[in-house]
Image 1 (cartoon, rainbow, N blue to C red):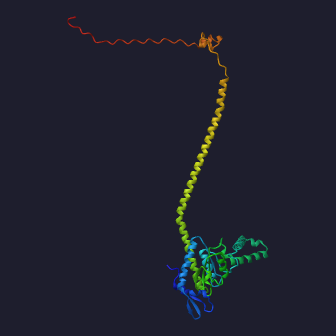
Image 2: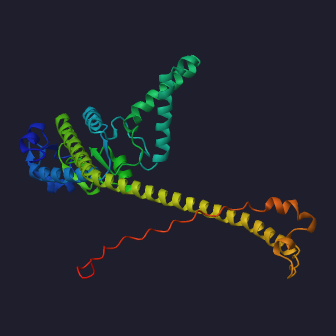
Length: 349
């Protein structure tokens, strides 16, 4: 599907250029003809150039880039602000301050100051100030909001700049070229196309033409953001799996560290037990080495007499003498088993 149709370009008056006496010869290749002293722009080339610029902006935003909308003419102030805010991109529609790009550090400081003043106003700090001081700060805040309100969310230099009427915004074009930032611009018959990277030949004075071009760029930004979100959604499962693997790896590492710690504690406990046993074993060895060795008993003496002193033998021996054990009852002899009776023959009878 085409980004824009020929009918839309004709209805918006994109084909009308400037008067023939106010033209830049470098734009000759984009001019279809002349009618009533006004140059007519070739809309076939405009359609092709819009497609190229649209694809570039879409891919730029899909890759995480940003596009700065610039249009300070009365006819383009409202469309620039409306469509830039719609697609969430920074814009300049009041006045281009010198150094907006080349001296971005200073400009970012001014933006921070504006943000601080807005915070003070919201907190009611102006009411506690003297009236003159509060009035001065209020006027400065109003001026900052008018000139820098569109870039309050721009945290870094943009990756590209979209300009309507490069002749009026020549300072912005010069700064972008100095920094090497790509330029996408609507170029009329009185402008120089050689300083623009993505030229869109068309009417830069008509309100409807400027509105159409801003809408096309906003659509490109939104499509690029949709592509970026789709890529992120497709990569989300992979990222989740990677995060899960990292979590599992961390758990395994923690378990291994805990196992090593427990092994070290057990080794220390074993070493402590060994150290406690060594002094006890040494003491037993010393005690056994220092004890006197008893003399061997005489051959005539019994072991009991050798062990006990003579005066101890007596009642102690009698008391220690075991009681007599009764004889066991005689075991009855088994009676003989009767055998078979002898057989008496008649002769013996």
